[in-house]
Amino acid sequence: MRKTLFLVMTDQIEGVFIPFVKAALWILSQIYWFLLALRRLFYRIGILKRHGLSLPVISVGNLTLGGVGKTPLIEYLVRILKENGFRPVVLTRGYMAKKAGHQAQGSDEAAMVEAKWHVPVLAGADRFKNAKKFMEKIPVDVFLLDDGFQHWRLGRDLDIVAIDATNPWGNGHLLPRGILREPKKALSRADIFVLTKIDLGNERLEDIRKDLAAINPKAPIVEAIHKPVLFSDLRSNDELDLASIQGERICTVCGVGSPNSFIKTLVELEADIDEHFAFLDHHVYSAADIQTMIHQCQKKGIAVLVTTEKDAVKLGAFLNLFPDSIRVLSLKIEIVIVSGEGEFLERINHLL
Image 1 (spheres, helix red, strand yellow):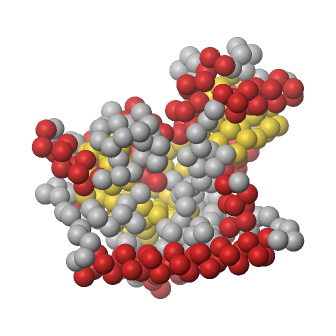
Image 2 (image 1 turned 180 degrees about the vertical axis):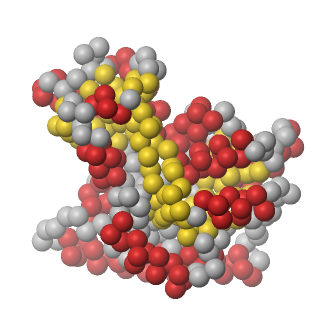
């Protein structure tokens, strides 16, 4: 049901009753816009309180539903900060978190960042409370607020907004008729724009730049690509070079906001994608999902299953179900800034 609704709101499905469903979703989007505007007003006039921390807070957010590459961007910031001697801590809502506080196991992105970069990740809805408790006990220099652009309760010193160059605004409608979480004019609050996946969406770059310049001419525009680095075998932890899947018949599995980008990357690596499972962002995998994947792979004689790093965190719990005849690999992606990195780092250094 959720997947069908997503296909309707992103104009990927047609049918006799679809126009009526879209009309209903549009009405709901107007209600959503009104509640959004009311909430912003309450924060501006002080009915709802915004809380600041005594330490710098850098927010990394976006304007649309998932898939823009916030997690690789946060990983990039963590690496830069640690290399310069700072002690960062990541604050995340943790859509799959079991409880608030220092609990990364329940959140896929949180677990991945914490495991890879050895940095504390605080998952929970009350990010201000989590940050206050943590800084009272453990030394920290800067907080990175994950998915923070629409999180008004915690004040921030720098608002970085990531924008997917392959699909910057969706169909232009607000949720639930489209994928916009706020109207485009909300980008006037941003301090820095990071255009991601510009190598996959370069035909739209000029139009995106014009849109951003019209809305917020003071915010610098940084451009980045998502660079595939290597494959990791989930069982053995062996690292394989990118050429290892050239011509290989594979099955792909992902539960991310932008599955097409994942597929395009593997196609460019010359993989032969013979089966594909695409789930909604933050999908909770079940044993039944795994058995379906295994059945299809065995039916088609596929010996390699490739997934994203984020999904690998969750699929790792089901490795015992996969037969030895099927290798399970995850594709490591890094964000590489190809334009504007100097100014980007200068803003962060000035803040700290």
